[in-house]
Length: 124
Length: 250
Image (cartoon, rainbow over all chains, first blue to last red):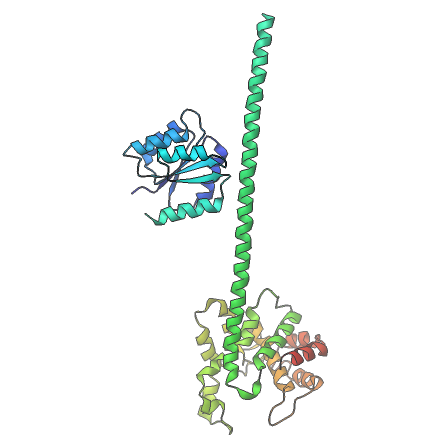
């Protein structure tokens, strides 16, 4: 049983912030990736239970990454949380079609982040 | 040659401008994100503070209820525990002990006689003199009280006062015959407050002493029944402070 969380964002500041927020709070191991291509590699290796996925990224965007994770039996079990900008109805529609489970709107609330991971951790 | 150089320079400048605009947007986003963290931090802090206050209030209410339950059996002492607690807090403050943020001392004062719930009515309300056996039972109430509070973490300081509230400075008290500084300081403070309240309260068999009379009787016990330093602190408190408490709690 995997207990990994993967944080994918091209902004190192956000990756660091999410990692620091979740550090020591959840039982999950934290992993990071800075774009979609790297995310798929790490996801195949670590098979995370939860993936936080930014939308706008170089090389491969979050929507495409999400779709590919869903198509891969090694990674399709993950709960995928899209990190979206506040005004993005169109993005959310695309993300749902790609198989995203939920959304965390930037700037996200750290409390919401913690509660979400807590809830997902309990459901295992 | 020079023209091409200029074009490249122009291109480089506009590339840098785009890069700068991107970085500025990122910095603005990150600032917003940090503000969100600050907002959540503030929310958690306020929640935590109000929970701590609520906890404090319910601790206090619980202790008051327990103390009132003990008092209810004792017809003529009235609000003795509440008054003793108020006097005791004043003396503790004068001694440099109590702070308004540390109600633990007051809890011990309020609950000092909780062990009396283990004494039967026939002994507690006996109008005649007690037999030796009955007196022994009564004198066990400090230990009983401590046992009752055992395991209640927020009352562990109070439990010490409960156990030692009948000790005397010269070692002739009970149950442990502690002497001087061996007696917990809050219990030494309590002893003075307890006697002060007993003296200044009317009893069926005698009138209430005046504050001046009570003061001189207490002074006579300095060094034998009472800690002399506690008496010193007690003496710095004006009559009006005691009068106000006596009138407020009756």
